Length: 518
Image (cartoon, rainbow, N blue to C red):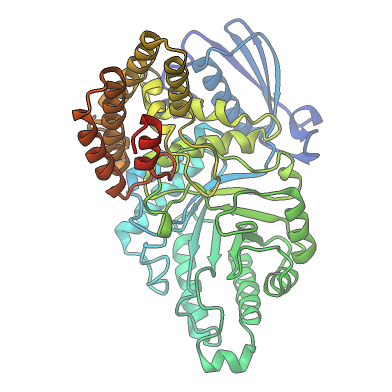
């Protein structure tokens, strides 16, 4: 197994003796915490360089290797027994944003990272893939079909479920049998290349039926959707009884007991998964109480389409790098799982995606800050992580509304406290130390590597912030008023830049107040 996945693990296991034992007993097949049979559980027994793995199948063995590799890299592989099983049954991500779809290589890269962090599901649903949405009736050209097949094969290598999604809702005539025939023809094309999990997306479309024939036959949109889902699911099962289906309803957020979603949920098969984003399109919190209300209303556990870290549409000036927060620790009891909607920026998406993986595997013990710092070390080289965090500290602005720029404000508070006590030398040393960190971060962000290219819009504004702070510190030490015009010129440049970093404050007024200028 390790030899087949050398690109994922590299030589991290060198010098270790890892043995595997497979069984079908309660010890390795049943998760006591979730009261669920699982093929993902494993038990590690560590004694020095000797590691014994107990599990039920190769999938459990793969997750054990992922865990061992992470512990080795973090230098946390201590002697003892570790009994490990996931909190959530479904753990994954979706390429479901508006904007430029990921490249083939980006898709492979994100999938490998997600697998390494024990995610088990990927949904393919880029809004701007023409054959997913606009040209849903048309079959894929052969070259694109073969790329999809390669992704499917890659997912199988990582023991991941690969869902291909279709979104016909913008133009479908529900009453026309030829439309359903086109849907099935397209589906069978994808099945032939190994896809056995499908998504039917009916989101972001008109709430009312568009065609008079549909209105006459169904009366309401929900009735048309119920018939389409049931017919599609039945046809899928005729192709292959193992096929699974996920549906995204037109009403995909709210309380979970609204008319449309209640009627839809109660009239489609119980094994059809239903996407739900929570209280809002981009929900600050996902709570167990809300999940219970959804279950009561729909007779389905929600499968959360979590719109974080996505930053499309009105959020395009934000860069979402912070860890996932605001999801209840026991949410796994009341939901199928969580699928994170990623950003157009594939490399940047990896950082919050790893924090999702940590939460989904062990939600009870999830530590957002620890997970975030570990994620940065994975995506950014360990030796560059401390520098990168100086910049990432300013990118907490999102629907989650966590505190932003905490490290910077802590440094500024220390410098201000030193000034107020009259210790000008200490204030100078603290200022120089923080400016040194900012400059080291600046040097990293100017590298010609993919993640720095993705961050350019935000890093350029960060560079202006660095210049502003440098100017302020120089002024405080010298009281040279010639510097003020330069500082306020930089402030005007900073405020004119559309990218959002740090907090939304009136910098000019704050500066005048701090510097005692009228």
